[in-house]
Length: 152
Image (tube, rainbow, N blue to C red):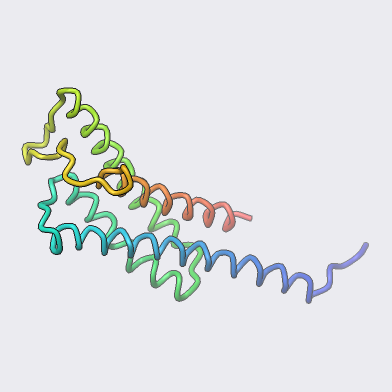
């Protein structure tokens, strides 16, 4: 029986750890860009966020801190904290995007705050909730990769 030498094992483990840190850094960057973008849209451009936008913000903003610290400390287990936030945020963003499509065909927002079905701005053909959905989907994907790698 051949024993795997210690340097080979160490090299493979280092590659695994570096990859995890990259996924964490990418997820952090996405959360920072999404947060900065939402603040610019409201504070810089004066757009008033609807109730669903607020819910998405509530779920995105903590991801900047949680993922940033995890990236700095290389905590691969952060997916246990970040995944619930990103999947719930993605669900709300998907619902919000659906409301905008149905508003264009005559549907209306049912949350009392109004304006949820209104498209205030498009960036590269995507509405603000579409951009939020994209950010949450990318962060969720990164967290799922970390979850799979942690189970190995």
